[in-house]
Image 1 (cartoon, rainbow, N blue to C red):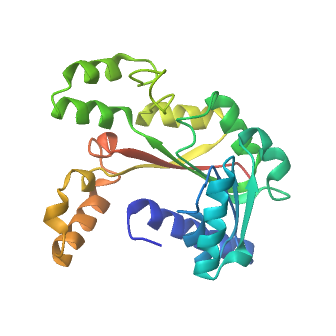
Image 2 (cartoon, one colour):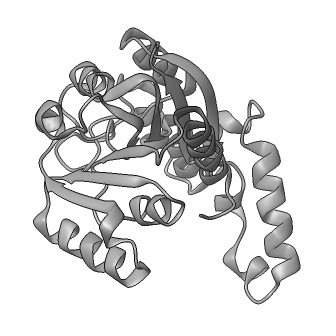
Image 3 (tube, rainbow, N blue to C red):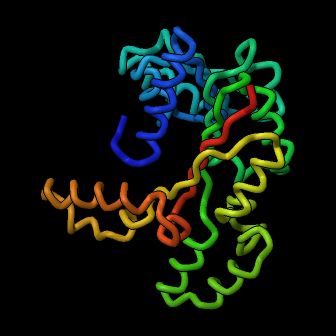
Length: 242
């Protein structure tokens, strides 16, 4: 797995789960698509079930898993959050991934309830969402001040529900409230892309030392407010009571 803050947190979570359970951790990746997260987790030793509505994405996942030599650890299933109860591992998953999911579902509360029912007692859910304030800042810096103001004032942080693929964006407090209301205990909220997304690619191209420095800077900024709170994406780890 990569070295950014989100991957490091997931590495720690699966290592702790393996030690606690004495077996291969079971991961459920909801909306995991082509396996960007699932295949590295399988390579790290997890048994991963990926649920996604797109057959094309699942076919890409299967090819990627075969190329990585972990096809026996990855189970692709077609479905969405409404099918979680039927498709989840018996007893629930030790780690449930909902990366890029809550911004696009029709009902956030119902989706979180489905995630909770699919999580084993004592297990964790990893949620990665688009950050409202990052979108506001990006548009303001680009001179699109009217759009920035609309994003800031809109209840869901959306410019135009008819044209945007996202139905909502989150901020730190709102994400924590949603997960807590769903019965989870939020253990961590950090940023992904707090500063690294602002560094020009030309600064790190063919310069490993600068790239390493950017990675170190991103790690340091990931949990520090206000830098965390303006990151491109917000990442939360929340625990289901045992």
